[in-house]
Image 1 (cartoon, rainbow, N blue to C red):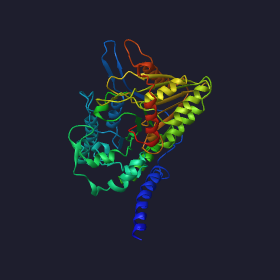
Image 2: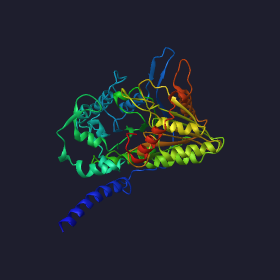
Image 3: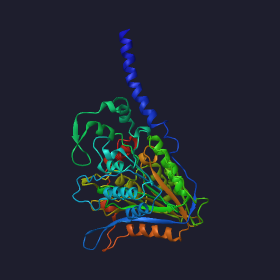
Image 4: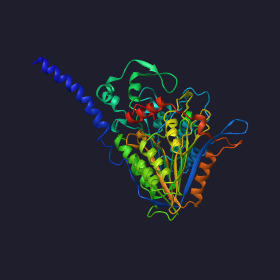
Length: 477
């Protein structure tokens, strides 16, 4: 009898982690309100924003910021409501020797200044637990906001699906309890000092609230900025893209943020807008898309292309198999495709091995797709941008927080993008097309990209490594 009981216990020890892994990475759904597909709304006021980094004729790095300049302007104009949902909100710089701009301090001070100037302004900040290294250290910027009666909501990542099921199933069973904090201290993986072992154990779940959103309102306007940029000092020289817009589409954005607040036991938004009776009358349409809905929109936009159409893509991480296969199929239909990738060589002073972009680039290049690399000099080409130009239909632009990876697009992370449609000749569409062309073409005075051959990687071993990491979730991308 004792032998059978022992066997039963052993069987349960095997089955329970397996069930936990399968449920939390498979049938478990994200909370209601995620994977959101907004309706297209006409927008009158839309502005594309870019942070550009390139090398000039003297081989000096030139950085042109626009996104956070615009964010601070929106904050300064908002006296009724401000919501910030940003993934990285800290002064970490890793092993970098210099920081281009102290964005975390600038954002902190901008919010505090506005709260002091307009005490009745409702301000809410949402961010990811990575900023406290998963509870391992204090976060001075966030603490200062709370001292000024600005609520700071740390996203509850436990409610999300598990992108790394082989590890997360064990973590959920044995290590997730707050009562099991480790006394063993280890070096802070993001900066100086030490953090408990429990911080590393949480980090290995590889999931995040990866959104980058600002919403601001005054008595007349309701405005939002969705981008790929973080208020993170170590990221301040990165290349990024974003869009600023107004109107009822911003209310859709607020609805998606209510979901994050709810799943993280955050405050209820009290703000009620005025003067939003109808959509705008502009020639550009925009909708909000989150999580897996982003992948659905990207795949559909590429799938609809025909011979004579074109696709331009600038991406920090490209590894998601459906998107890669859809791009290859479009190329076979005669679609002109240009893909500009970060070479995945720099990570805040640390050297990376090129996975996954060099392996994705290899696959695309073999199929005749044009691939180039951003000419990075320690910073990252952090944009997440797709443009589809059609001969007979409006152009489509999709941009925001989401990298094109399994973790970003398959309902594991929290992500926000916008999908924009308009005539190719519309000034806004032309502007972002010009931005891509400037990044794609290099000159002696503006060295923004390098040919595919510069970072070409034909290693079969690293291709297998990439495929395994993408399929299992045992990766940081």
